[in-house]
Image 1 (cartoon, helix red, strand yellow):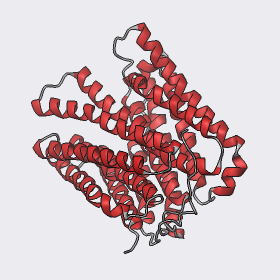
Image 2 (cartoon, helix red, strand yellow):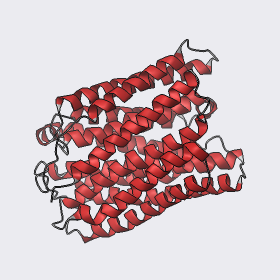
Image 3 (cartoon, helix red, strand yellow):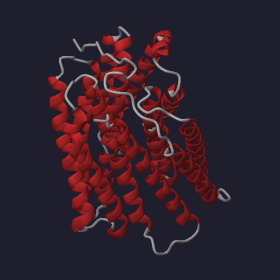
Image 4 (cartoon, one colour):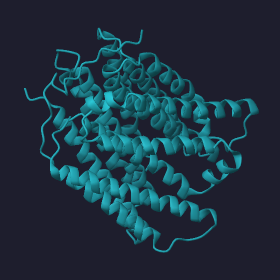
Length: 419
């Protein structure tokens, strides 16, 4: 039977194309007019599909691929139902949210999506435990599964409030930020670190350092949620714990970067150059994000950040596009999970250019908003940036490469241990 990784990754890139197309429509509606579409409802469909159909789907596929490198049984066949179930709920939300917003169908698909993530977490946890290998990367992956489940508390709270039409502004924001934090900084980040650590540890002897970095980020993740809620009244002790969490994250990242730099020759020898620049870009964006989080612990800066929507939107796009999306594409290309063509490489260049332009425009708009200034033609410029990103992703979807066969993935063999 043909190894199915290429099929699942083709779905990932197609879903990314759909997300980009909706992004273009959203930007067009802001700039011009599409009266038959509800902007808010379409935005909900856009964001939910981005989380479930692009990022979660791709992370699930890459995590299952990791299992396939260490098991002889047809792993993708066993996970096929859950992968299809996740896609079913993603497309359900993509269709239902623009039509009805938060309603019976959209909430039902959201709920099914959460239950699917529960089933995946349980099954994947058991499969990790069944491996004879006891890897440091498993700590990251298990933590990612826990945070995926934890984030659902925010989603359930939000859905309950929407269904009951009982909306209190503070509680609404608490639920939204809870979900976003444990998705972005929990499930997405820890899964990504688990995947990259599984590639780093086998070519190094840095088990203790990698474990220390993991514990720093794990200990900081829960209290770091309150970085998104500094606008709430809180005890001074809680505030200083939040500040400590922000410092812990920056410290962990500095240790990780130093580890890479000190062992640069080892990594450059074992990591293909093809997509390494994308991983470096994602790392640079993550550095900016962590420094912004640390800066947000200053009360005056925090009030500015949460008080201006363009800054919030720019930050969310920095995480979703600049860090997570670039990392996923970079990981897939670097480790040759698809055989990239020239067309796909050109598409990636165009996508990255579009992301850079989009982020620059959003941040410029945010800074201008601090002084209550308007940037001429900013909406038109953001529409052009969205079209550039769409063009790049469209080119990426023209690739026809195949994946490597099981066990031939860059001769990947993991020998690290958490002991």
